[in-house]
Length: 153
Image (cartoon, rainbow, N blue to C red; front, side):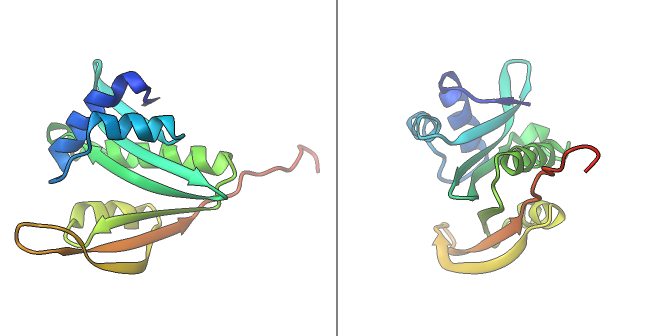
């Protein structure tokens, strides 16, 4: 698992489009990266097959998106990227991680619950769908603070 660079923007957009009705463009990913977001990638060969994008500010962070190529789902890639992102954010001093997930996305909700996230809010009708709008569930979890004790203290 590696950090994305601007050179990955088109591949990230292609991966995102496989997972969401309204995929983000290469320009969207380039803007996120240029703005300081971190995108961690799991690859198969040179191709990204899973990613998580996070942005941190003022002791909090948000998961912007998490996606896995349909052919690679069920292999623990998303859980591994999520754990890596949480460890990195914690080491950077982030105390709380938040996200939004569609209420009808049961696999993603289960992943986040297993990772220690809890529901903290709801945005009614947030995600447009052809069958009608779907609520967004806002979830959050505290991140462990790295130990700053010196050996022998």
